[in-house]
Image (cartoon, rainbow, N blue to C red):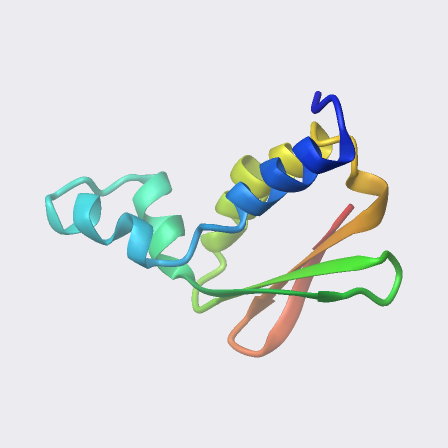
Length: 102
């Protein structure tokens, strides 16, 4: 658990760095597993003012495998950040909202 709002924000901010470029090198190097496949499906992450909570993090993907990254990476960071009551995560696959977390 983060000990301050600032630490929680930094933790969540770190989790938003999940766009496909991060997995490009391991994937091209032959590492094909759920982590690399789900990471390559994340195309963009936007942070905006939320509708239900003050902060909305929208994760755009082209494959539903990206939900794994949302649940296992950023979702866990948000849960343990101490600021989860201020953050909503929204998964969007090919322009269609498929899942809201938190």
